[in-house]
Figure 1 (cartoon, rainbow, N blue to C red):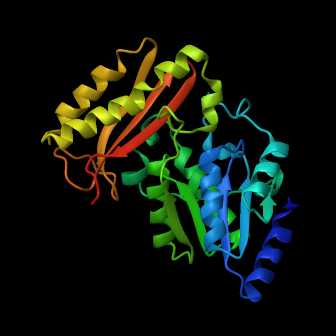
Figure 2 (figure 1 turned 180 degrees about the vertical axis):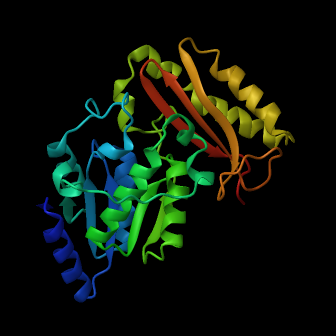
Length: 284
């Protein structure tokens, strides 16, 4: 598997592939790959002739008291996993090549999408995300880019960015991949101790409770949020960042459940912040 660190070299290789008529599939990551990432690679393999994975722990999407320095990294293991999943090329830039001295350009999506949910407690986070993703799209030149739907807000924001800026990239959102017991896979799960790991199952159990209530006729968002909050707070050490029910496209808060409703959660256990989400109405 080829590894490229220089952005100009990556861009030249991508443009050469496109001239040869190859379709480029792209999976942007921060590394420390798990089965969720691998599901994106497997789908990308089906959709592209050249499958590119990027690994870059993007400093501009971390706040001053977040886990940039401690974010887990294992490039050697990531390379092996990507190769086994059918990847062709890894783009592995460093901070200096992505944000050289004098860098002063940012990409931002309207506050309606970015200041809610995770954006409330992580100011500037999504500006960092949209900036780095737009740069990666310029460098890798993908035809299709694949993202996990665990980061539901991020996916909605990236869809809006590509639409508004006429980026010729198809955005594919893939289903959440879960551990056998239901916990959404995340690189940050490694931070959880055994007790926190057990208590973290409250997220998926609470989401399933909400879906159960909706299936039995409950439509009041306030009632659902109360039930979910009560379930999560049964767990010692759980600190709720948010529980919201939003429209799947606009992320606008909803008062009554319909087929567009998604429940989104962010909960801390110790220093570990976990997110999860679930559509409240089963799609036929």
